[in-house]
Picture 1: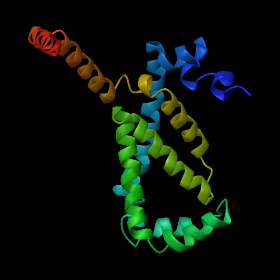
Picture 2: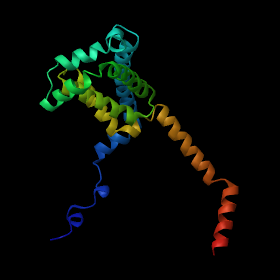
Picture 3: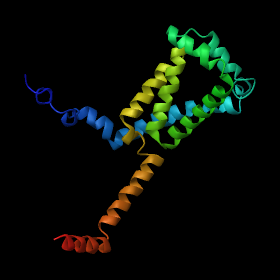
Picture 4: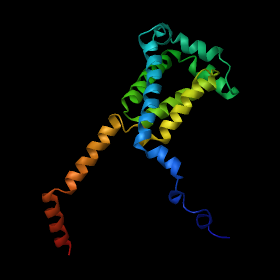
Length: 196
C-alpha cells in the first residue's frame, strides 16, 4: 500500500478554490467582514452592558447570580450529562459565573468592535453560544455562531480594518525598516565574514 501522504497529498499543499481564496483574502470583502464583525460585537456589547449596568444587572451581578441559576436550573439541557453539569456545578456557583458571563460578553463585544484579538473574541463568542445552546436556548445563537465561524475563517481579512490590522501593519513596517537598515546590513556582512 502506498504512503497515505503520497496518496492523499500533503494538507498544507491543498489550495483553496479561487472564489474561496478571494472571499478570505480580498480587501473588498474586508469591508463586508468588518461590518459583520462590528455588528456581532455590538450585539455582544449590548448583552454585556445589560448585565453589567442595565436591566439584567441584579440577576447577574447581585443576588447570587439568580439569572444564571434560573437559566441553568430550569432550562432543558440538550444532553443529560450537560444537565448534570448545570445542576452540580453551575447552579451552586451561579454568583461568580454570572459575573464571569457578564464580563465575557462585554469583553467579546469590545474585542469584536475594535478588531482586537479578533480570533480569540470569535472563539469566545462560539464558546458562550455553545453553552447557551446546550442549556436549551436557541434564540439567535445559530445566527451569531454562523457569524463567529465566518470571522474565524476569515480572521486575517475581518480584522484588517481594526486594531489587529494596525498592529500587523506596524510590525510589517518595522520589519521592513529593520531589514533595510544599513547598520544591520553591515553587521550581518561582518558576521558572515567571521563565520567563513
